[in-house]
Length: 242
Image 1 (cartoon, rainbow, N blue to C red):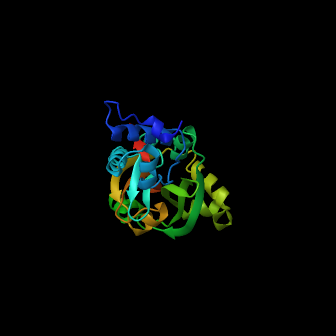
Image 2 (cartoon, one colour):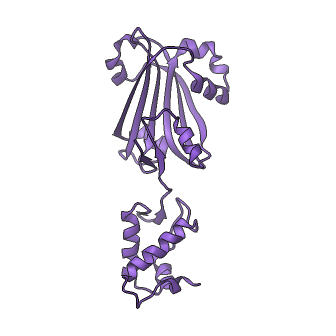
Image 3 (cartoon, rainbow, N blue to C red):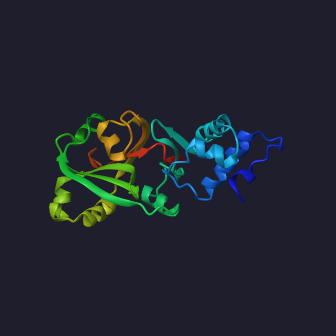
């Protein structure tokens, strides 16, 4: 069956909607994967034997539904499918990805010592002056990062676990298991924020693009934040379920 056999100009259904349905099916069937371009409008006009305005209207419908995206000077690209994530749940983000068939990979970008961000210190001044170790990392699939992490723990605990002698793999294990055996209060906050230059670079988005920020703060009985997991997520890749 050729492409234009899918289009019936005698049908009461508008031609643009028939083209929209045909393209939607090809995308669902995997003919056009996420982040790959659709054929040029001229080729779609030839394939479906319709006018250019019909093709444009069909593509506009796909754009409206978040299936494709027009990129200036590059064409129309199929967007990667949305991934479900519950920011209030107990499962980690990597667990959510794994359950949806995504083989996500961690990449450690940087290790450094720092104090907590000012916004956190203002809420928890007892932590002021406590030296912390921070690991900056991204989690993603193939060549696209989906989340950027900044994970803070006390320098003393990082050093005790092996410090700079830890391999990236061992550091990830330490971060996932920390803090063990402690009775800590957990505070969680979730908000939309515009990506600054660093976050935009890490997530391969434009500065100012909407991202979702999730903060997990683990607080001891003295009011000190002993671990902060600050995560930035690409808003265009996730569908949030609560």
